[in-house]
Amino acid sequence: MSSKKTFLEHANISVPDIDEAIAFLQTVAPDFEVRKDDSSGEDPPRWVHFGNDESYIALQAVDPKHHPKIWNRTYINYGINHLAFVVSDFDAVAMRLLQKGYRQGIAVEKSPYRKRAYFFDKAGFEWEIVEYLSEKPGEKNRYT
Image (cartoon, rainbow, N blue to C red):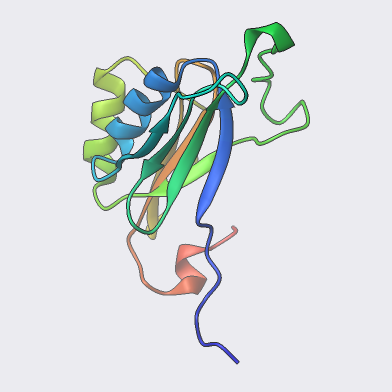
């Protein structure tokens, strides 16, 4: 039996503007870089793997002939509501996002064990950033 823990390696997201998605993600995760940018074909259109050696976000362009719809009614429509990044300096990341004009989402409760906030990128996708102030799972994941 393996002692390795399961983790999410990547998420694949179709976006209206890959370069804008990269700009947002670079603000949150300065250690992320373009691992692969493939704009070689028509089907599928351009895709980019953007991340580090452990994880990445796969960004997929959508062919406009398919008439994509913006679905960004989080918590109302089916689909992904948000993805979260654990960061080492919450205050710095939040400040960079605000300075670049990204809109903050719903307010969250204060916690002695974590700092977190939600932000929307320019396409309307919601992202959570969180910094854990405790190493204890019972404190980090407190649900009250």
